[in-house]
Amino acid sequence: MSNGVYNPFVNAQAQFDRVAEIIGLDQATRDLLRQPLREYHFLIPVKMDDGTTKVFRGFRVQHNDARGPAKGGIRFHPEETADTVRALAMWMTWKCAVVDIPLGGGKGGIICDPRNLSEKEQERLCRGWVRQIVRNLGPYLDVPAPDVMTSSKHMLWMLDEFETITGGHYPGFITGKPVGMGGSLGRTEATGYGVIYTVREALKDRGINIKDTTASIQGFGNVAQHAAKLFSQLGGTVIAVSCWDNVDKRAYTFRKKDGVDVDELRSITDVYGGITKDKARDLGYEVLDAMAWLEQDVDILIPAALENQITAENVNKISSQVKLIAEGANGPTTPDADEAIKHRRIFMIPDFLANAGGVTCSYFEQVQSNANYYWEKEEVLSKLDTKMTAAFHAVNDLAKRSSLYMRDAAYVIAINRVAQAVKMRGWV
Ligand code: GLU
Image (tube, rainbow, N blue to C red):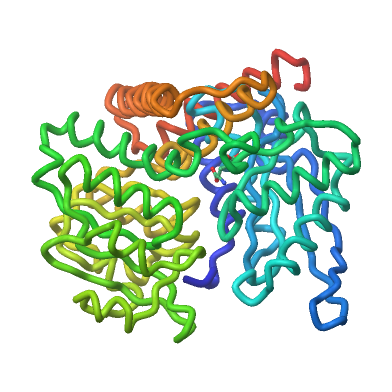
């Protein structure tokens, strides 16, 4: 699960350029949208528990905010780079636009491995990140959220730091907060559930009963766990998940051919979505190679870990049984692998559509936080389902009507909306 040799920002720009050509976008709008509007790079000195000081590198990229405040998560990852954050910020702009919520795109990151940091060190790191960027964030400016290896706990430390500095209560400053502390019910489930809402619609559209389908999932963090849970609840069978083993410091695929028991597997999963192989073996799982998840004879593949996982080197290992790929992660497929998938006519639900449930629920959380009035879980999830279902069908209909690959159709809708916003504002 490394970033390999691929640069996700080059990938994101290539995807944009291709669709800009398809829709005949004018040069100024292309120049404005193919790179971030603003970006911040900074250092975060942190007092470690042993008395030493360690200096971390942090980022916040605001790709575009023509449709509303920039919105997007903060990742903690040892292999984070300015370019991964740039790509992810750009994908956030398209994600918010494709589900038609009034937000722009941003992303943050810190180069670190939280698995090797204590709670207190993580808290100081979160507070340090906010201190460096505080003037450029805010409920009506740029609103962060959780992402890879960050959770509600980190969001609350960040909120507390922001409120301490600004001297007021601004729960709409950040989303993904704990429920009862400004968080929204349903936010934890939202991204994974959203992936499955789109899978459900895609299967329905093809006349396939979800109860007859099997899936293999890469990752077992928040997105993958909730995708697996809802998919199983709807009657589908997850036969494999792949994730990190923090004892062996490598990933494995854990397989149970008659179906993974999601709750049982969650009971041996750490907070970062890691599972140690011995515990999985004790529960009767076969322990296979890290990338074995991709080679399973299943109907559906759900990459829900990191970017650049399905590549030119491994795309041919995808079984001929696979009918559908739903990208739970951001940027899991490299452009050359994407070409091969398009060629094989595997139905693709692209990342910024499939995983838009997280930010859609973040939008609901922000609305609730700004109003200081909180909704019931059923209301949140039903609004989420409505948004995701509508977005899926808008993209699917365009793809059919114009014979476009699903990723391109999603881009056409998203880029057109953002292009219209920058024009209406008089930026171009
Ligand atoms: N990090 C999530 C994403 O990539 C959610 C962002 C948000 O809620 O703002 O979509």
